[in-house]
Image 1 (cartoon, helix red, strand yellow):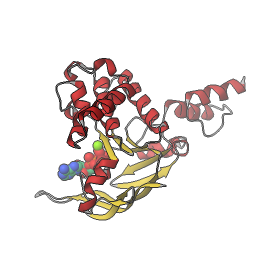
Image 2 (cartoon, protein in one colour):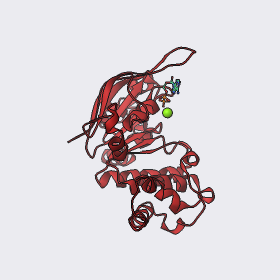
Image 3 (cartoon, rainbow, N blue to C red):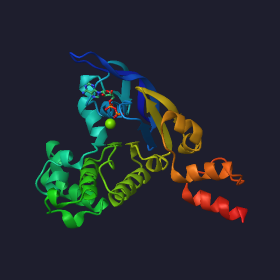
Image 4 (cartoon, protein in one colour):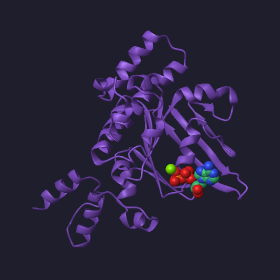
Length: 276
Ligand code: ADP
Ligand code: MG
């Protein structure tokens, strides 16, 4: 089942200083339950694309459909927003309430759900991100990673089909990054459709599929293995590759007889063990 389809999507930011083409003919589709990472240099259009998934922005040209709904059709707006949860980069700008559980409940209260149901869903969502013990905390007392987990709990409570993450780990320390990625993978395992924008290649390598953006277009749409084991091409495009893929490429150049498409540290360790 198809969950998202973009057809020749264009987005132009208009201003007195001139027009800026941020998306220049983007086409792809995402199946229900897929985990897709989006990578791209700064200004390549990732965040602009993210905002099209829940109609925060509307196409200047072309179309985007979410669960079959044309986002530019005004009568679909409410249903599109109900289908797509968003988690952004800066946890501080996402927190809206003074108490953790109120923050998680915020979206539900706006839907007019009865208080008992809200409490149940907030409990489950806080539990899902291992933050039940913090329900009465002030969000300002939490670490960045904990704040992002609260933001994720808010989305879980909304029970959307799709969750879009726009560089959710960019402001976190390594522990916070791991916590967030664990949540993302768990949500994917539970059947959510995940769009995960990141500039950490190690994170993108964990998706099922990677879209690589440059200049408002999609340059590559392939598996992480195919994308990241082409270290030379990735360098040319200005990207790193995951450390294990980089090491494997270097070892091969030094004459080690390693398979071509090593992506993870485990795979590299296994391949080296076979050489003993
Ligand atoms: P990314 O998330 O990949 O860094 P963005 O989608 O934020 O890229 O931006 C794509 C391009 O659009 C950039 O050139 C950026 O400067 C421009 N842009 C983004 N937001 C606006 C805006 N509100 N007004 C004008 N230009 C914008
Ligand atoms: Mg961005």
